[in-house]
Image 1 (tube, rainbow, N blue to C red):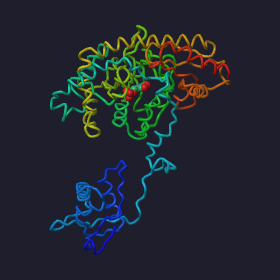
Image 2: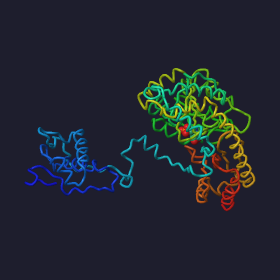
Image 3: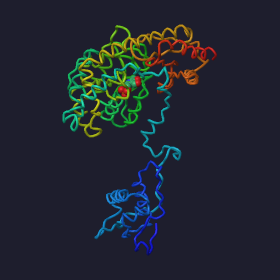
Image 4: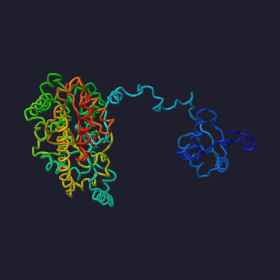
Length: 496
Ligand SMILES: Cc1ncc(COP(=O)(O)O)c(C=O)c1O
């Protein structure tokens, strides 16, 4: 920066090097330079700048770049124009000290600048590997009908109605709510009206909003033990006090929940296919749970994450379909049956709930992205999802059978694999012979080393685990690879 006779008292920017290899556009580099000079007092209020042509010549860039930088600084209040076309520095609050650099991952020694709730979310240790052939809950997308999908995306957006573009309901695109209600009747036997359905940003997004809607900080919430780690994150972020409630072969032990926290505000459960154990909650426990919720004014979130993939005929009715008092909020997702990255799911609840949900949502994130909703409504309406689902059920049933066979052949004395009628994973429990020899975390570590990462069951516990085991996902596992890949795990167990 120079002020001399040659510039007639105006300030030049001679010497400012523009970096043409940088990702930062040139006009932003010019603006950043001037802004910094103003903020640290080197350019004081009233200082006249050289004209844009002269500045451009000095910098060796086009005049348009200088004018764009000026426009930016005018809009930010750093510069103002003066009569007869000049530009001068405006009076702005100057930085009293050098600006504090924003924290970067390498300079952040601790997370104490984050809220306690966010820290409690980040503090949970969770080992997983979405790229592993044994990843739980990862569907196989290689046979997805992308040709149909892309045609529907194109068609629905060729001439969209105004309401799809600017004022979609917080509860989602009405034709999609209707198609989802019909789909749930056909696939889950869940009879509901479209006005009880809300389209959400997958089930994680729905859970997060429901937690904030229903809970105050410090409210007690029953969570299954062992349970779904990711659900606990939203609960913690909402300030909930988590109360682990054990699960046995009949599902959640409701009497234990009542003993530990009778006045809990909410219970989050996976009754059709408990995550991670895979058991279905029996009718008696379901009724006990509904009765407790009705008597205490508590809410139940039913996460029905992948019961569309039934491998046997036994379809377990949803808890929602038994709910006579309107305390169950049913969550479902298109992540598993279509594409996880689509981030679309739904909730089904009483109208009282969905109306309050809509009013709150309109103030938080408005609604789930609309682009996909239009195509998805057609995908459902034209029967593509049911066809795809029928195909994938066979594929996953074959993969489950291959994993069961491999586990039972390779490790019959070490692992016990309870029957699992649905889903994309099996949980193999350690038999007593392994006790004291090796932990599931150690097996998991060894599995990572061989490129076959398997999640340990013990990380799904909030408290001290009373069982050890392995969560063997098969969504994207080639059935032929089940045996050779699990043989590596068997060798690790034997050598322990
Ligand atoms: C128990 C459980 N619930 C829900 C989900 C689905 O999450 P989303 O719909 O957010 O993709 C998963 C995914 O793995 C899951 O395992």
